[in-house]
Length: 171
Image (cartoon, rainbow, N blue to C red; front, top):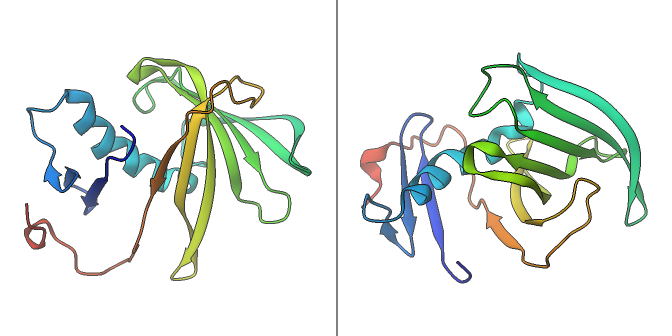
């Protein structure tokens, strides 16, 4: 929903999600809680999980996007890995930074069988590049945007080992 502000606090085990400052509860459609509790955490940590057991990688032909020739890797999952082993990702790896600048994905567990494209920006936090900005829109598997209907997501004030606990969050 354009103009709606979502916030999420997560300690590695538990989370609190808010929409326009109000906690997301059972009264909202179920997908909201599921998406914002699980998916945001997944997108935030995804780049660090690319070599986990059960993740399959396949080199594809390089692709040129806006003057940069990207190494392109298809990523899929082995049986019984994650939400759905039918999900597919196409990662565009920047040849200078070795970070993923954009990727295509589907999420069959959420009923998303056609791809979205996600463009990513990073911030350096405690010496680690963290994906703190994402924008995504419907696309085809060649990376062409099908509808200029972008959703943006920001992670701000990222801190590690900051003493966070659920009791410190006012609901």
